[in-house]
Image 1 (cartoon, rainbow, N blue to C red):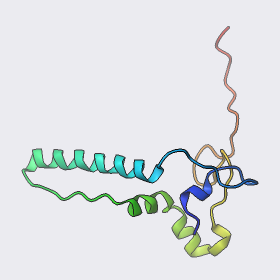
Image 2: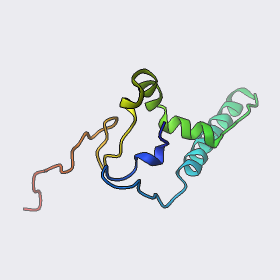
Image 3: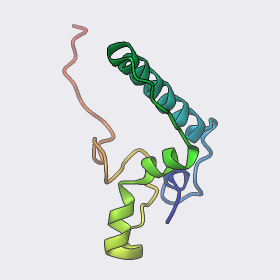
Image 4: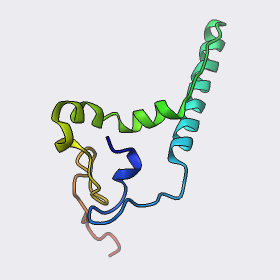
Length: 104
């Protein structure tokens, strides 16, 4: 199954290079949230907890929406690069949103 970075970029071009470590950043944010929740739990109950954050789990979570789709439908359900548009999140294929001009 394609990894999350394979989905970045325009459909008719090679995958786009994202100039940051998405998996590392995502794992760090996830770990920070887990630490905050653990500290709150300890303050309320006095109990300690174990926090674990792995890059593999983070990458899987980012691709998890595709796991059941590909498992059930095979290669036909592989995610494709679609530039700014995606089939699994909003806005769906909306490139321009027109709003009323409020500068008058």
